[in-house]
Image (cartoon, rainbow, N blue to C red):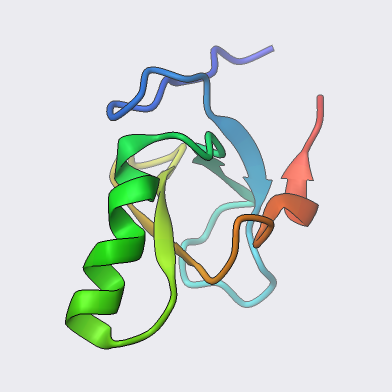
Length: 87
């Protein structure tokens, strides 16, 4: 089993998340923080509403090949959880 990275914002173990077909990330999965109390995710709701005028947030995502992180936009607490890959 590969070592799971920890979210730099909340230190929770990240989960494998199935990358959508036709994604430009070029990986089968991304590591994603699904902690609903993560400060990055929690702050995102206010930030997106203030800057974009829509109810949305983002979760921290990490590319397993490049090691680069970034946001995974989400529109609800349950968004993307159906694509978690359980080992």
